[in-house]
Picture (tube, rainbow, N blue to C red):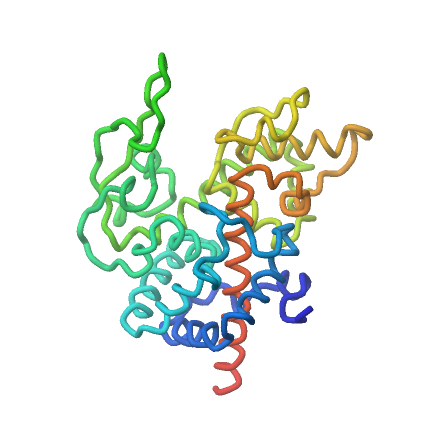
Length: 326
C-alpha cells in the first residue's frame, strides 16, 4: 500500500488546513492529479476507499459513483483546476466560504461539485433558484440560520413554496413542497460551506447529545478520528434529520430516504449497548460498520469523504513543494 494513503497519513489532514487555497495551488493540484495517470489515480482512490469500507471500484450509480468513463469522477475537476480562469473563480469562491465559515474547504468543493458542478466557478450576481441550481430545497426557510452576515443574505430573494418536482405522487398524500430562495450565483459555494457547518454543528450535535447526554457526547466526539468527523459532516449535509431507529426492525428495512443522522446515531448506540448498557460509543463506526452501506446516504457521504481525502493529499504535496521553493 502507498504510504501516502495510509490511514494515519490521511488522519493528519492537509498542510496548513485553515489557509485559503490560492489560484496557483489549485492549478498545481489539478496538474499533479492529472500527471498521475488513470491507473495511479484509480489506485489512490481505491486505497483511500478501503479505509472507509468502500468496495474497490466504489458503487456504480448515482451520488455513490466514484468512477465514470474509466477514470475517477474527480478527473473533470482536476482538469477544470488547470484552467487559469476557472482556477481564479474557484479560488475566489473558496476564499469567500473560508471568510465566513469554519469548515473543510475541500469537503465544500466536493459537495459543490456533486450538488451543482457549475457552482464551483460561478461568479455573477445573477439571481438563481436554489432548488434548480443547487439542490438547496429549503433555503427560504433556513437562510437566517446559516450564520452568514446580512450583507450576504440581504441580496437574496424569497420564493413562494411550490410542489417538489422530484417527488413521486402517492395516492391520498400531498406532494411535499420545497421552499428555495433566489440567490446570487456566486454565493453557491459559500452556501454549501455554511449548510455543511450548520447541519453538523447544530443538528448533529443536538442529536448526539439527545442520544448520549452532554458529557458523554463530548467525550465520544473527542475520541472520534478526524476522518470520522468528516463523515458525520458530509452525512449531516445530506440527511440532517431522520426517523427514529426501531431496534425491532432490521437495518436494511429502515435504510431508506428517511435514514438520517438521528437514525444512524441511535443504531450505533443500540448496536454498542445490546450486551453492555454502559459501553462507550465509537462514532468512527459511521465508516467502519459496513452494514451501514445499505443506506444510500451513507454511501454518498463516504464517497464525498474519499474524494476530499484524495484532494487533501494532492494539496499537501503542492503546499510542501511551494514551501520548499520559498
